[in-house]
Length: 226
Image 1 (cartoon, rainbow, N blue to C red):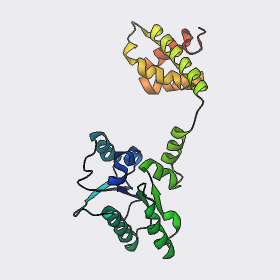
Image 2 (image 1 turned 90 degrees about the vertical axis):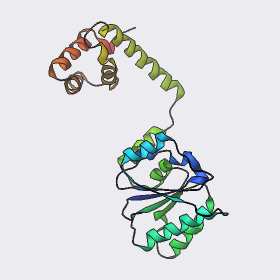
Image 3 (image 1 turned 120 degrees about the vertical axis):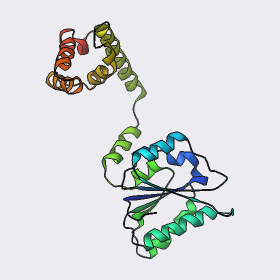
Image 4 (image 1 turned 45 degrees about the vertical axis):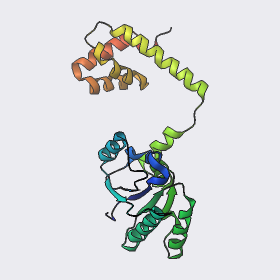
């Protein structure tokens, strides 16, 4: 295991299981994810492994050699010591629901390590948020987790459905019918006419983009009154 990652995620897999891996798709190449597991909990979904692989992060595992009470906790506590003792300067995020890890933080704080460099979190996603790294991924997670009004979202859903139905009518039978998903994405961006035109060219090329924009403009697709 390398000590050079920006964020070091130590997963107490026996404790959090796959729920603790929520958010692995947000990991970066600079991050490190290490799974601590045992025979009691040794399987992971293919989807999560694919997400870990595609993230490009450094990945490692430690399997418990001999079963025992809190044995994986000792493994993780030892790993924290190994990281900090060998000069790792990033943040260590212990992914676990076990509040006993506060003792690890207390020890290292007493040794002069800032308290915000050792964190405990129930999942990778929550760990990224608590790291306060002020990154694009942190802002994205916060935006996706924001609470919204059910009534307002239903109104938004109805509007999107109306536009989708309108676009299906306009492009049915045309050479662009198979591009409907991308056309809907363009329409939902709520762009001004000039930006809509430029966006259409970027997505579909000059010739097709110009034709698609003309369809949208001539048929008043985005501002059609039901």
